[in-house]
Image (cartoon, rainbow, N blue to C red; front, side, top):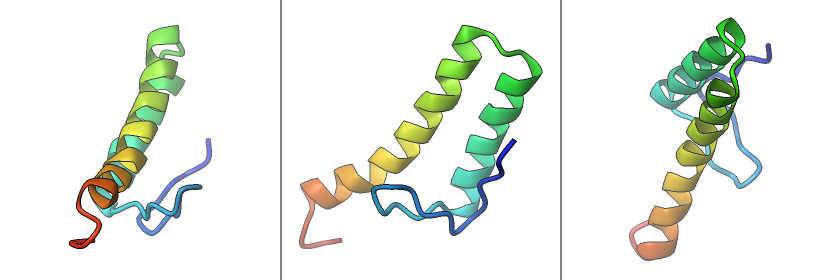
Length: 65
């Protein structure tokens, strides 16, 4: 399993914080421990949610970012 740590840069430029990296790695461990379709989808949802939050903020508040 590939490890994502704080400072990881996603394809859209989002830089993971320590908390974000830990949340994603927990979802990865859950999916690895029990590779159900739900857990695999959840791992993807967590990743997309993390990288989308920053993009949403930059799009809504461009002068503040």
